[in-house]
Amino acid sequence: MSASLIEIPGRVPVQVPPATYDLKELGYLEQEFVLEGSAESYGLVGDRSPDGRWTVQAAGQAQFFTRLLVRRPADEARFSGTVLVEWLNVSGGLDAAPDWMYTHTHLIRRGHAWVGVSAQRAGISGGGIVEGVSLKKAHPVRYAQLEHPGDQWSYDIYSQAARALRDADGPLAALSRGDPLRLLGSGHSQSAAFLVTYLNAVDQLAQEYDGFLIRGRGGSGASLDSGFHPGAPRRAGGERIRDDLRVPVIVLQTETDVALLGGGRAAQPDARLLRNWELAGAAHGDTYLFFASTHDDGYLDPQRLAEMMKPTASLPIGETGSVINSGPQHHYVACAAVECLNTWAGGGPSAPTAPRLNLAETGREFVRNPLGIATGGIRTPWTDVPVATLSGTGQSGGGVFAFLFGTTRALAPADIAQLYPGGQSDYRAKFEQSLDAAIAAGFLLSDDRAEILAISHFGWPG
Image (cartoon, rainbow, N blue to C red):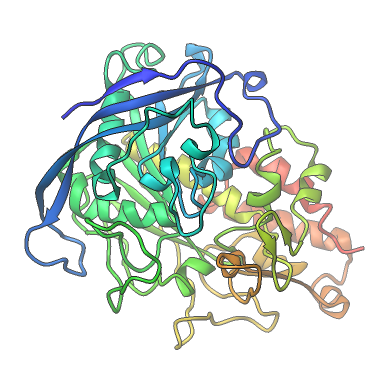
């Protein structure tokens, strides 16, 4: 089946959360489209086996009118041909774009396009885990024609979004200069749960995407018929992503995802087209996501960027019990994941393999060093040359989502003195050495080296 795209005229309303940078000044355009068509739902044939090798069949059609949000280079000469197609996250009862927020600086510097797909009903009409400002609630006239039949049709809607983007009349066709687009599917948190199911059940049939970046997945995929419900029963031991994948997949997990969301329970090994990246010292959400991402245009003064990422317990969604994770490694490693996936999907070298985090026997915490820093996983200067203990666990208060944001605990002066007997110059030298090791391993980008070094200068205590 194929869907049609019709541009929604007029300026795109302010997104949530609003960004302070101007896309036009960065050479990018923003457009909205109605994606209209008839979608299939799917039903399982046989068991939903824990190995992820699921077989499905069509279970019923429904009409849909949903939205695509497109951000792309204004100059066709800048367009790389790569499009990150994000399954927008609706946990807050609205369309949120955490993948854009974490990786937009890299997308823009490479000339990639980004498309946000309103794949689920809650982003259009409300009804997420919490009630938020859905599209129709915020702008009832502009989005009056949007109608979503339900999340069981979201999988095919996501396939049809890709098909419409590849169409000769699509919004990116003129930019591609006749070359095929490279579409990379992405999703974070609840959206990751849907993409796990998409990969296991639908991708082998649809074959629309050239690679996938899955961030912050839980132990199980979403349901094919009822979608995602946090309180729904989950398979003991979790569900793997099928190992006979068609295209490359990177799964990027923080401490929060592995220990608290059950994302480590599936004990998913790497495979020919699958890489599991578990990031030490990182949380599902952090100060970069909440504060810096909406200001970071890729050219921010390093001192200003460092200020925006300082530890705080005062979030837009409420107060947390202690200050949240303030490490920037989630942002920078996510950018590296996009780069590695794009190269891999284009026929280049496969993404590097990463060591796994060392889980304690309970499976809800990690083996930590004497400073409280998790061992194993992807290592960065923020864990191996620390001035604070960064964790993805241990948070409390602040409502239903607070546990996702981890903690920051400044190291004691005695610990700082023992780690860096030469003072700040000793710290800087060790930080730079660790940074270069992470870049050489492929988990940070040389493009970000100067900025990372610059902001590290403002992390020294006192």
